[in-house]
Image 1: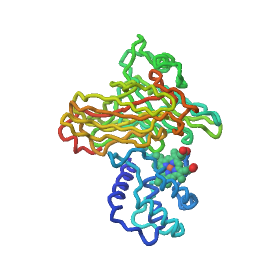
Image 2: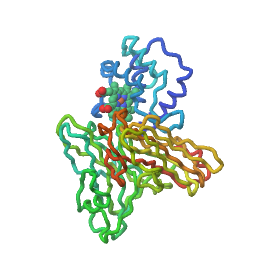
Image 3: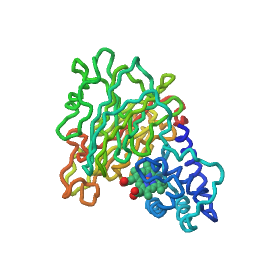
Image 4: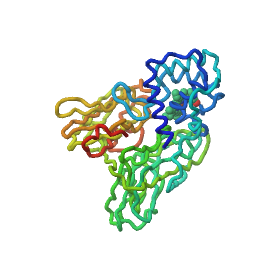
Length: 446
Ligand code: HEC
């Protein structure tokens, strides 16, 4: 927890000072480059992270030209949202000054130098440092074959607890970092007496064309014993490299785990691996000492959501298609976190709300959609959207050969395939986590 807040403070300080700051006469690793890498890169690039470690002088020196290349071309740190449209917590963006520091360090001869000011050694460690969890749920190990294509699994992680339990944080921890690409997981909640055992049924299923969500539920034995469906709370556990379980301030957030339930990771995405291996990822759960004051609620626009995709998600080969989804907000709400979602044909994404008086509240703009970096974006402060506002999400899809991520050459007709979750089918979703509005929310920091 300390690390996450600390990093955030560091990056604000970095941004605020950069305008007036003149480049130093001599840029050394310890004085300038190490703190910069710690703030913007070590979230993901640390020892055993599965990605290039960038925590020592030797590593930074050895990879200095790659570092220069990826930052100058805005490839790293990955942050697809346009910072001129809206800003978010823990936003990772290098400004011109930061980039100049890296070039100057190289030009100055890659000197190690001395630390100035406070040493920030604690950031050298694996940043998964929330401490000891109250509960660990292992995920059934899955086998990843060498050089196989990307794999998408639906995973059931059942649990039984002595009593209903308030939880502050649910964290997914990848076993093999180098292959675990991302995870989106929901919580299935059984009411008392509705389910004899949560441990029956399949635990791992490939996401495939021909199984509908209903079939997946049946194979995994997820329905109640009487055949009805249990409650499903969306997006309670998520993972992307460098994205850690969200801890909100001021009593916002938190979950209630029922006595019987399971996490449904719908999907767990593995990238291609250089060798055969077994992944044993797990979920860490931290109990809350007091009940959450304002637990999150959620709705989603678009595919499988409360408002349809318009016109429809039928994307013909060799075309660029624009769609949108819109919804009138029925009550005053305070938005906490948003998550735009498209698959491989996504090209750009924008969401905003038009209030009844006509003003626009910008939410997010992603000018160059990148399937690999689908963050849950949290605002620095709660964003009030008044009752009667029209929330609009717009997406553009590129189903031409110009789209390097297009899964088909030549391009083929791609659609949502009735809510399939396969990556080569498309989705258009805008997921909004919020709390009902209360007087003064505009000033509440997250
Ligand atoms: C949110 C996580 C994240 C952050 C933050 C991040 N990176 Fe990366 N970086 C990655 C991942 C994941 C890859 C591998 C990309 C791939 O395989 O496509 C990568 C790749 C790289 C590479 C290419 C390495 C190779 O093996 O080819 C370099 C160099 C790099 N990052 C430098 C940086 C620098 C410098 C920063 C900070 C300014 C940074 N990264 C911030 C996740 C991150």
